[in-house]
Length: 336
Image (tube, rainbow, N blue to C red):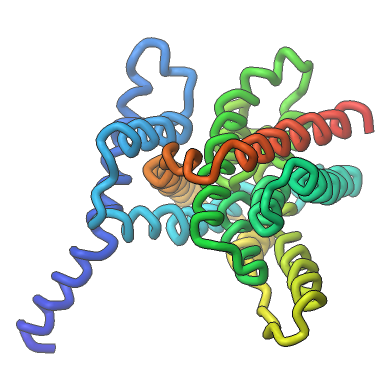
């Protein structure tokens, strides 16, 4: 490659993902530094990062040239970090959730989806928008919304509205649920299962789970990834429903949650191969930093003004779905 070609390549990269990654890294640094301030020491860097990102985005505005890097951090970097998180788990820990835990997750997902679709119809929310909110609440936040839109083909503003609403209430859950754990009498396993079964985004689950302790974080992560694994059959079901109403619509290929498969593979490897303590610690630190950057990017993407673009009814629906999934899953965790 010539020097001119190399220069062009570097310019292309710098105008692509680098500015957004730098901004996410700066927010991450602020989050880590804020822990030294009195009153913030008990909060994890991940939670501080998403709050700092939201403040930056909604007060100062996110630069347009940084959006590609922010999207990269929120999607690819975050999913890679989740894969690496598998090095902190073993199959023995995964088995601790048990068949009962998987049943709680599946029942919560199905009940929440049906509740959201039904309530959306009753209060007059557009069917496609209601499906996006239902998928985002019951499965895995923005990833489920984007995946579901492959088959629902909703309008762009509906996707934006759903993502904004899910991010808002998922963030409320991430910040508030750890404070409720002692009030509700939940031990770390029960809290982790509740968080994993009810909070919207994978990163939000991780942020809430590890805020309550290592065991809670690990349980929450596995529970949440079990929900994520249910994304493909849900999208297939919606695709069949859509095609039933339109014989000419082409078959949409459901997305493969590759990071879930990779996460499971890493957990299996970690269960079979003993890793040196120094390497394990280095991976754990890198994982936390990447997770924090991903959460910072999520905060930077949250535009509260988007919630006003489609009126209050979808917001009421998203809030109602948030309350339902929290209450339904908590009831199962406490009494099932």
